[in-house]
Length: 203
Image (cartoon, rainbow, N blue to C red; front, side, top):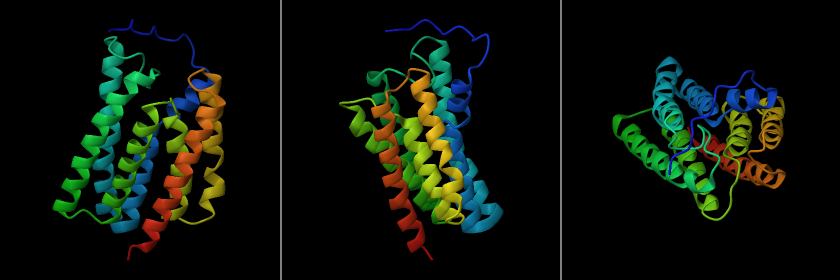
């Protein structure tokens, strides 16, 4: 089934802008680069940047192309059914990247961070089998908590408004209900807490 390509908007609504700026891809990029920098300076940051290009930027580029061709209903994929293969394919790609990182000797915090991105994808995939949930909010909440693990605890309250704004934007644009954003936030916080514990246990 194909969908008509969405016409270019005349103007960008603030809620749409928030969803674009704080989409999962740029937040994954931020987290991986910061993780790499913490682990090994510029070398680690380059590992994080390269990883993000594969597991975040590349899937989003593919989705934008598919959306333009009418294969999916938008680059954020509003349809629950269409999200399943997207999560599955991105999960396989991410798992392969983790395996490559371990084999090539990436700074350990980078594959650990990538593995938690994979965990998030698997949880979202499992939930999406029965119910639509906000991946935007899940990633934003995980990013806010994870940033504290990678920098300092005071970064968490500074980053906390981001998932709130993202949740409001996703409801405002009609892409999610309040319940779907709330569950997304819960998923993100739980994964972020687990990631914090894992990062703290590393030498």
